[in-house]
Image 1 (tube, rainbow, N blue to C red):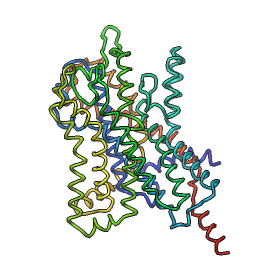
Image 2: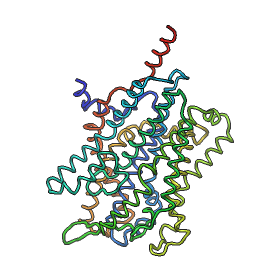
Image 3: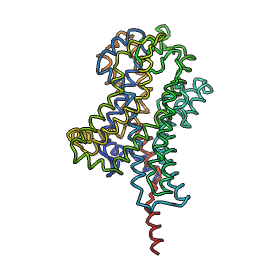
Image 4: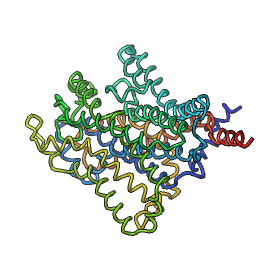
Length: 475
């Protein structure tokens, strides 16, 4: 009975417009909604550039709004921060003094297994659905053997380690693979918390430092790529043109696939994936610790100088990455003759993700605490009910968007050529893609994402074992 009720279309549709729980932080709805749409708009424009020939970039990039849209990949980091914050908040809320310490191994394993199963059913069924569609396509094209390696990497949370996405429609799910692997580290921390009854903040700091050293080492000693000078967010005509359109065949041809594959491998190895995003998730954990284990909320409410100081630091750190992205070095790089200063700037792009995320965490803390004019305004704005459906659909939107956007853009270029691509039509394209992709994301939410959430086991509650342990002591 539970299985069939999980697919109840009416109930699932109503859930799109409701908040998940009473303890839900309402401002997170607006943050998720805006961040997910920023990623969506980014994919729409960046795919357009990848499909373009020379001359397109000069018509699109000068627009300041489109420049901001092309920074949308940074909004993925917001989701990593929120993930770390929410998971560690739960861990901290389950600490009941010292009564949680020395829990039986069997109880700890049940808790950890329950957590992983719930998160897996939340994230991966939708990915497997798209992989299945791709397998059917490859079978029809008699090309399944070539796609097996990338499909297996995606299925087993490894597509954030080795790049190569041409055989999977969810190559951008590298971020989900990163999150899944991070859960194992967070659960190791949780296991220590259940053994000691303490918050394991020192262990969290050690893991953060190790991750930071590994990531920074990769950035410093990065070799020069064949085509990409260390980082792909350098916008030049040569770097952006990845596909060439052949009017006689109507097909798009990938430029230098062997060289591109090698560049992608190095790029992912050094800049993307688990080791580069783990520090961001831990930053979210630190934010949760600050919120629930320090006097930060009280200081924000009582001390105006303290609020202003946190706001100023948060804005400076948060904006640092975007300031770097708008520097003139981005558009004036000569690939074969990169200056030392330009190399430093390029490397800072990567390292600044961490600085940017610290700033974002401070601003989020001000918002959820309604601290001052800034916190009150954005808490009110981001908590509006209008954001709820867009927040609930954010994951389905994220996974469903790539293929429809790509097909839509290829179709438009085949019909109108490249001359139609300008600032005005770029915005119209985002609107058209929105009208195409959101209905698809609603369908996948109703048929796959929400039913899998409904079928997930109930959250394992430590309270029952803690209270039982206390009763035994009293007896």
